[in-house]
Length: 118
Image (tube, rainbow, N blue to C red; front, side, top):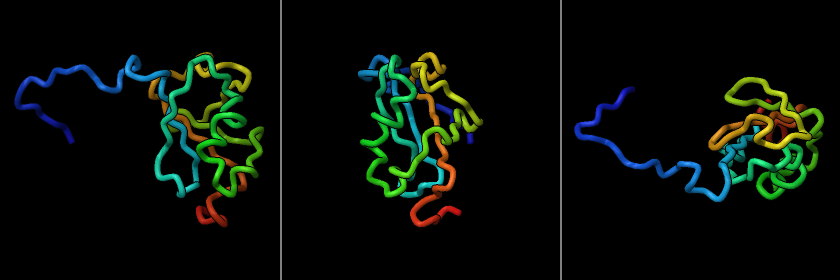
């Protein structure tokens, strides 16, 4: 559905990178309906990608009973809806992630509370 503005519609974007302490990264956990949408986290571009599973996501998804069961070596990653293989040893920026990018991860064998998303 397209939108037609009746008057000039010029203003600075409120979600521009400079308005945040660090670039926003949206991260979603597939097949876990306890989380209705990806979470938005301000993460410095020099954050190692491998730190997501060990240092960043436990504070957001860690209270889910399946989180402790995740085998991070087997996680499937998606970027813009496409399968993606990030380099765990490189930074977010080195993996090509920038402000307001969306990534998702799927955990094989873990599909929601008591398998509710099978």
